[in-house]
Length: 336
Image 1 (cartoon, rainbow, N blue to C red):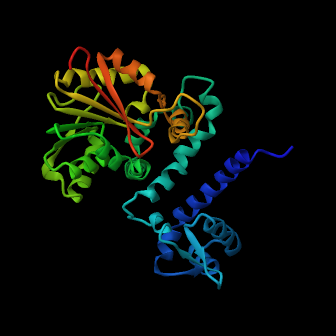
Image 2: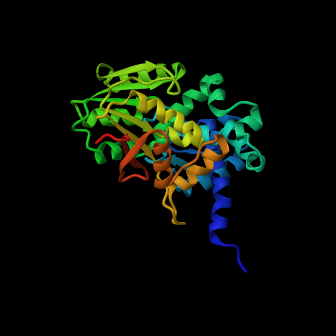
Image 3: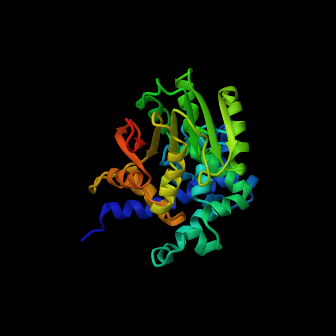
């Protein structure tokens, strides 16, 4: 019997992902910005061996990120330009983070992770993931930029799918650098925003919002969503926050939001709500990352409804978007 193609693809993909990481880490996409170059030319500049580098370049060219010219020089494609430093997609930072030391070491201890209560970073480094980020500003900056890439078309899809017409003030709770909030502000000029996150994140958020031209419409607040969030807003956004945490911690966060809400407030939970069956879904792959790095997980609609109910909130509806994410809209239990 032959090996199932799904297994072959998965095992080979691990090597290909590592090859892309190697090229990004060496700065090859930036070096190809001026035009096609041979492996030998690049190898001399990078002080590596030309034949192995050629093998890596040839493999990555199968992805459409590079193109092999007739003279065996390699050119960067339009798609491959996303790997260059400073590209607005954040793809470079996604590659360097997801294939970097911290993620790899957390993944390596996965057998221990599923055998005890500690997360991958706690096993490998003795500290939880977000505590490590606070100690490693370079990694934290890359992680924050990576959020642009991992969100993909989600921010625009959320801004399109939910009717923000009656929302005048939106608080983005744990909003990172404001990737989703920026899309909502851009699409709805009447709306004003506030972004709450930890002090070590808010500096990046202020720069990101200012660069996008929204500093005058969005307040950035340093705080802790376990303690308090700004009160009385029309809507509160929790985008990719709850999947970082275990159930009891999620309920703590939701109760903090509930205390700040009025009877007219809406809570918008943006997550990859999982289908109950075995059908493929991006959230099921992301769930493995959550398993390796945190105590969090992706959840079904029924599981989100249960969490919100425990926090005194009631689900009004679950809105699908053109992305893999959905918007779970909730209100205070007993309100309209």
